[in-house]
Length: 292
Image (cartoon, rainbow, N blue to C red):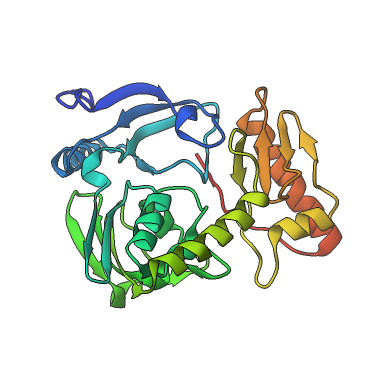
């Protein structure tokens, strides 16, 4: 029996992944699942386990580079409304893993709930943000997370409470196969003041990142006490190019791919940057982007 037998309503074969990533590059997924409900998601996860197929979760694609060869196994995209719901209860905001981080930030600010506004301008979904503990110099998503609902590779659902969660710089202890939703415990503040603060942070961030129409991604983690972008610029690499990939002239920790760019070009440029920064500044850069 083929993996997708009986699942054809929400599982497709050989779906190109480029349109789902910010780099707009990459080959196809062997199987691409977009379940419309928790039950359909469980069916995919359980079938994959029984067939011995790897499962990868695809969020907003802002932190992902897919190779031209594509991906074997199953790629799951939680884009359905069932995985993008938001609900308020006092100072608590619950959000589905498929919801965009920006939408959750805006909702919290509009409701006069402070804490997440420092995440404005960070792309991706709630699930991806939790997995990588997305944040800025003003704070990260982990510090406001009260609990998370997850699914393991057997399709079983678990609640992870704050006491059992560990968040560090660009990582978390949420290592289950699927993050389904999270609850954030926030603080009350005047919505007008919150909005002003968020708008200021948004303006500063947008001025330093590549333009919205560009195929791009943020590449390296910031070494402790340092800025990866500043280090790359100090190494004389702003504007450096390999094939169709170039270090952004707006922020050196971003690589921009042109219409002829390939994933291999980006990987070669990443290696070049890492080598040059190590040689000139003695700092070993660690990648933040995922490579499939």
